[in-house]
Length: 115
Length: 114
View 1 (cartoon, chains in turn purple, orange):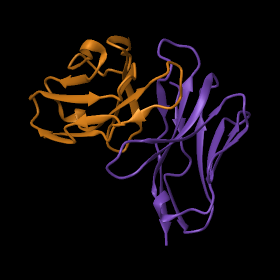
View 2 (cartoon, chains in turn green, red):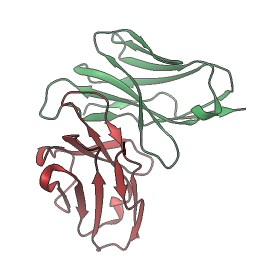
View 3 (spheres, chains in turn brown, yellow):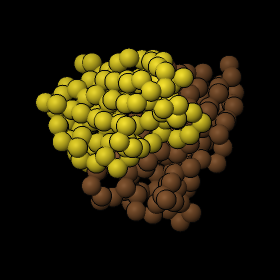
């Protein structure tokens, strides 16, 4: 079936470095792609989204890149801080269907930031 | 403003018992979703309510799972009888706008079936 997956399950960086978290997806009909951050003991927290007709979107310290040719999504975090340590999930919302807003998640990447 | 709240935060039950999880969405959010993360796997969709109606329950694993949202406010997810493979973290999320992308998640209920 359709799925959204991740290349790397873990990523360790030093404080101040830039982090890049990658995600591959298989559903060409996806309308939106979203990145969530999940800290220990908490639920997923929305970070940023990008619509399928865009290639790049920037937020505060984060940038999401979408390459539809190779069905690849990435999250770049600038000047990574210890507070960024968490599990990061990519997710997609398919266009159409009976349940808009339904998220299909990838496996998740554990980001660890060392002081 | 209160976020999405889930109760209990943890539950340990024996195989064959019944457990009911509760989710209180953000006030005014018509859309309520249930998701589940089984150990080591991705978060998977269970079902979607729009107000009190089930919009999509395609992710419900079997008929041992029953979700309700009477009155279109809080929702419950009952597992009866629980099996070992039901262990995992159950998340609830709500959103205000149908078709919007920003869903707000609760902290989850960790269910352990022994």
